[in-house]
Amino acid sequence: MSTFRYYEPESVAEVVSALKDNVNSSVIGGGSDLLSEIKNGTTKPNVLLGLSRIDDLKRITATDTEVRIGSMVTINAVSSDPVIKRDYGALSEASAGLATPQIRNVGTLGGNLNQRPRCWYYRNPLIDCLKKGGTKCYALGGHTKYLCVTEGERCYIVHPSDTAVALSLFSAEIEIASAGDIRRIPIGSFFVSPSENILRETILGPDEFVTAVYLPSHAPESRHMSKYIKARERQSGDFALVSVGISLKVSSGTIQACNICFGGIAPTPYRSIQMEKYLVNRSVENLDVSYAAGLAISDPKPFPDNEYKVTLATNLVKKALSDLICDL
Amino acid sequence: MNTSLSEYPSSSVNLIVNEQAHQLSVRDHWTLLDVLRDVLELTGSKRGCDRGECGSCTVLLDGVPVYSCQILALQSQGKTVITIEGLSQNGVMTALQQAFLDNDGGQCGYCTPGFVISSLALLRDNPNPTDKEICDALSGNICRCNAYGRIIESVRSASGRN
Image 1 (tube, rainbow over the protein chains, first blue to last red):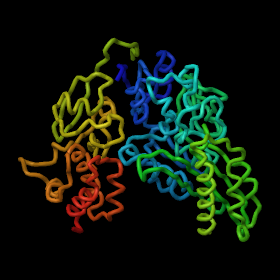
Image 2: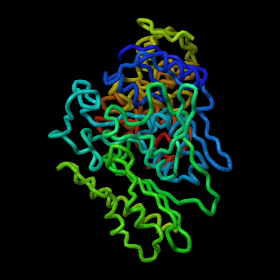
Image 3: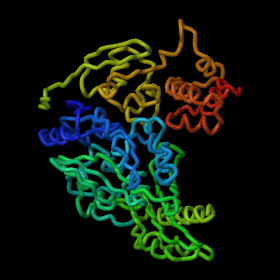
C-alpha cells in the first residue's frame, strides 16, 4: 500500500481546511472501499482524514420535520435504527442486506454513498481507462455482464450503493461541507453521470465532503410503505446485479404517490419516472402489474452479455410492487 | 495541527489486545492486521484476500467482528481487540473452539480463526441461533475448502440448543 499521513481533525471546519491545504487528500469513513483502492493503486492520497472524533457525524437525530443521519453512522446502525425501520423501511432493508456483517459494522452511510464503481476495468490498476483519465473504455468489446443497460455514455459503470437507491425514494437531501459553507442538495443532484463528469460519480469538489443525510418526517397518516429488493449472484457480500426500491402511499384503494428507483442498471440511481407516472392515481384493485413493470426502463440499451438485467429489473419491480400491494 | 506530508509518516497508537494494553509506534498506512501479525506477532488472524472479502482476518474490535485487513491501525486507537489467540485460557480451548475440533469444522484451517471469531460474537449475542442466523452471522467469512456444513454443525453444537 502506498504511504500517506493519517490524522483525525476535531471539527468539520478543520476537515475542510485540511482538504484545501493538502492536495490529494481524502476523508476516510470505515475505509472498506478506500483502502482497497489504495492497495490496488487506483488512488494514491497523500493525506487521509479520519472523521471519528467529530461526534456530530456519528449520530442519528430526529425532529418533528426531519431525520438527520450523520455521514459516519455505520450501516449496521442505519439498518437497526427503530425510526428508520418504521418510516423508511426500504433504507433499513437496503442497509441490512449490503456487503457482510464485518463491513456493516465499520462501513458508514457517507462511505456507502461515496464508494467508487466496481467496473473491473476501472478497478484493475494496470488498465488506464477513461474514468482514470485514460483514453479508452475497455468495457467496449470487453466483458459487460455487470455494467449498465441505460444512460451509459463513454463509460458504462453502475453505481454500487444500495443505500443511494433507497434514499432516492424518500426525497433525501445530502449535506455537504465546503470552505465556509454547509449546503444541502437533493440526492437526485448529488450523483452525476459519466456524461457530466467521467472522472467522478458525485458533484463533490476536492475540498468538500458529506456530513449528513436528511430525510423528511411524515405524520403517520401520510407515511409511505416501502420495500427494497436486491438480486445478486451470492447471498452475501455481493453487489446488486439489479436492485429496486419502491415506496407507495395508498389511500382508499388508490395510489396517491409512488417512487421507484433501480440500482445496477445505470451509472447513477435510476428513477423510473415513467412507471411512477403510470401508477399514480390508479386503483390497486385492478392494477396491471405486468404492464406497469414493463415500463421500468424507458430506453434500455444493453450490451449482448447484460440483456438479462432488463428482464431482471422488470421481474424485480413486479415482485416488489406485488408484495407491497399484498401487504395493504 | 501541521498537516504537511512527511516522508514515512508514523504515529503512536494505543490498543488493548487480548486484554493486554500496548502503546505502539506504527506507520500511518499500516492496517490493524499488519500490526497484529507483524508487530505483535499474533499470526492467528490470517491475511487471505487483504481486501475485506474473505474474512480470515476477522477480529473483534470493541466487541464487534471487523476485517482487520481493511481498517487502519490508527482507526483502532484506544479500542479493544480480541484475536483468536485471546480465547483459550492456560492452553485450554473454549467450548466453541473444542466444538470446531470435534466437528471437524476446519479443513485446511486457514479460514478457521475468522469463523471462530464471527461465531463467538454470534453466540455471545444470541446463544441459541437458528441455522439461518448462523449462516447470516458467518456470511462475511469464506471457506474455500467448502467445509460449511461442518462449520455450521460446529456452531450449532457449541450453542445452547445442541
